[in-house]
Image (cartoon, rainbow, N blue to C red; front, side, top):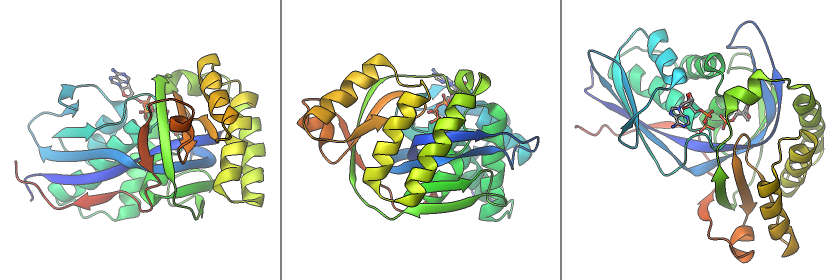
Length: 280
Ligand SMILES: Nc1ncnc2c1ncn2[C@@H]1O[C@H](COP(=O)(O)OP(=O)(O)O)[C@@H](O)[C@H]1O
Ligand SMILES: CC(C)(COP(=O)(O)O)[C@@H](O)C(=O)O
């Protein structure tokens, strides 16, 4: 048994999504499209007598992570380190859940396959109510088009083959659990339309346009996010809202050109992976 195992999971910003409920959380999820980012979460898992979860040194409670450990029947100290903010649409909870699954499998010699671990992390995230599609997209990397919902045994994934600089500007958080527990009919209707647009023309530019339309039609767009997007549009750039957060993402130098001081990232072309063990 390894002392400690470490995994890196990319962040993931969703441009648009539908909700696809199912009584089986490994089949439930969302369809939609989003970008895996080179900014992500480094997760370490170390066997411990009692479970604890910390993000950037601060102890937190995170349902998705606790459910992953329960599913694997282990207790561990899970530590996440990231530059990404929690709860602002970067899939930090999905990253923590997936990193925990990959790390715990190694640390406890559980001998599960990658698809089995992604299924566990996806189901845990869905049950916790903190995400529907981040985990499978973070497992694949790149710009994932989620054509059919659910974990690896039920979903159908495609991708927009693109690598690009991505800038982001965080205004604040949006409680994913609250939005997903409310009426999601309008969201799913707008998401379905955006998905067919991107399937017809799978390019990043079309993704950004479809995402902007989705943000407006789903009523998820907030005034402050809209104002920043308009500033980027004014200088000829392209920007949209990261779901589900009060966050603006732009391609290339859209936000910097509009006078903002954004974080700079890029499309992360591959999926979550274990990293060489670091002895603590
Ligand atoms: N200070 C905090 N702010 C936001 N979420 C927190 C905090 N502490 C713990 N959490 C937990 O972290 C998770 C955040 O999930 P979510 O809102 O989906 O974030 P993200 O968009 O980064 O995935 C939830 O399980 C929430 O209960
Ligand atoms: C948009 C969301 C439902 C939530 O994303 P986050 O708030 O980042 O957990 C995502 O999981 C998706 O299905 O696309």
